[in-house]
Image (tube, rainbow, N blue to C red):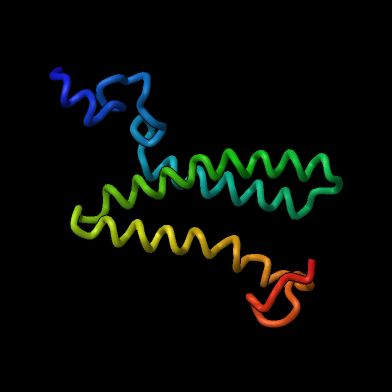
Length: 120
């Protein structure tokens, strides 16, 4: 294998460095991440004490670690190279708006309409 190709695709050159999406399939890893994150979120919601909540949040981190790169891999595989930058931009904007808008749905977190300010 020539040196340039190894640097262009390091995960493909060394099978030990391949990601989970390459080994098991992008869609399978993404769906597993979504399900894992959703179940961990449910566990967060029903956590009877802080210790269970912390453990559930750690499980959410594992699900997010599968979900986030999996979604970007699907974007790369799905979109034409000319459209990829726009698709990743939309993905980034939506990903950034999630944590900001999520608390607005919980009663008592905001003092008025979404984005009006935190009552913390």
